[in-house]
Each structure stands twice: as structure tokens, then as C-alpha cells.
Image 1 (cartoon, rainbow, N blue to C red):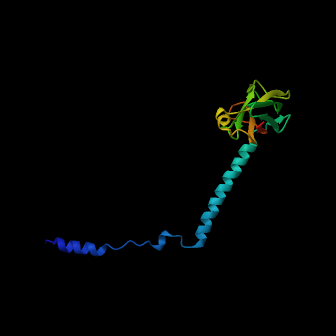
Image 2 (cartoon, rainbow, N blue to C red):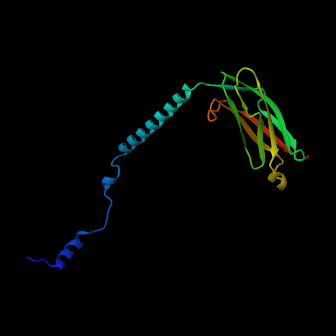
Image 3 (cartoon, one colour):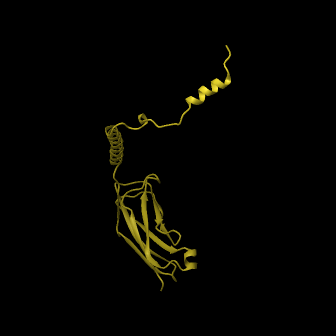
Length: 176
């Protein structure tokens, strides 16, 4: 028996209708939503507790700075200023490096000298922190201001393992 194409097409066009989202795709009760939120919250709390215990298991090295915060004040005509400080570590750490960051590196650069020590222990290590205006900030006159800060952090024994108690450096640049 031969079927006509016209009849087959007619049947198929009648079957196709508009797509409607069924209610089975949505959550059927507020209880299921509450269970899902509870499970997510438990997972988040579990991750937070795991992070806390992992960080608590690492030894707590302390860095003690003799002057906190350190203040540096200079004029635009001077271009830079410096101040001295010293630090100790408990327990001892070997070797250590000092990492410096400026709050506005496009206007103020901050360096520390020396920037590394073979060890840090109960004997104070002396450093000189120097702040200076960048050449571009001097050229366009944006260096004067007293809102600059920097931090000095002691890192060791690996460069990516920075110890607690960083030094805050307050920098004031005056016009005259």
C-alpha cells in the first residue's frame, strides 16, 4: 500500500505544537528549596572551618617593630625622605626578605634597605625606609599630600610566606 506524502505531512503538522514549560521543571515545594539552601550553607561552613584549622596549624611567627607606625615627612623640593626602624622575630626565621608596597605607586615609591637578612631572631635587624615622589608626580605637581601609606612585610623562610605584624609607613609630602 502506498501512502501519500500529503497525508503524512498533515499528520506531522498536527502533532507539533507550541512549547510550554511544564511544572515538573520547577521545585514543587518550598521545602525542597530550603533543603538545597541548607546543604549549600553546610558546605560553605565546612570549607570555612577547614580553612581555619589549616591556618591555625601553621606556626604563628611574630614580628615586632620598634617604631609602629613609622612616619616619613619631606618637602617636594627635597624629593624624598627616610626613617629608620628595627624588627625582631619570635621564633627565629632564616632567611628573611622585606617586601614593600605603596598605597599610590604612581605618586610615591617606597624602598627598604637592606631588603634581606640571613636570619631574623631576638637581635634587632635595622632597616632604613625611604619614600620618594615619582618623576611623573613631580612633573605634574601631584606629589604633595599627606594621605600616602606603605607597608613593609617580613617574609621567610620562603618569599611567599610572609609573617604577621607588618609595618605601616605614613608618608607626608609638603609643598615647602
